[in-house]
Image 1: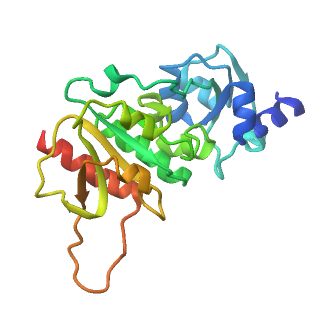
Image 2: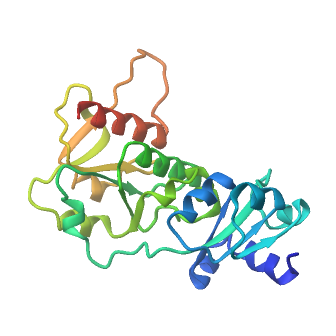
Length: 252
């Protein structure tokens, strides 16, 4: 049984200001909740009897009906369980150079990525390709928006998300540290040398990488189009991220 106050509390967590105030975020579905349970101690779990039997989890679980799950879920088709987890600290007062320049490691930097679905997919891509850290500009979508969390399909439990000033981040890097960016005036990614370390910058869905950040890119890449004439103007940022990460990892 779930109370009206609990329902109101959970529904408010759709908004960033309430997530920050309460220090919690929402995750839904057996896959996402299961992955997060391996990393975080939940604040609360609301689940159907079906999920409780399948998972064997009983601690901190409030058993609810399918009808009650529909009332608190942010999904069109709710999936057995909704859980609240503590909101990780995603801020970085000062860049961690030891983390950034760790031997032979790649990181992603997102410059103004706005769409929750794109951000969630990029987090999932980073997880797939073994990229542990994503640096986000302050105007990038909130990684703990319920839509983003759902789009990660549990990968948000495996990737460090850090919101920071990207200019400060890049200015703190060692001289000539590889900063890659996909740009229309870049060089064919399939023809360029790619290092096993560095930061790969991906830009806003409509405007690409902003001009101040573009000036920090010291290795400009282009994903070439293989159709001549009338064709798509650009790739979706999540697709471009997948292609770029795949080529880096293929070289290794």
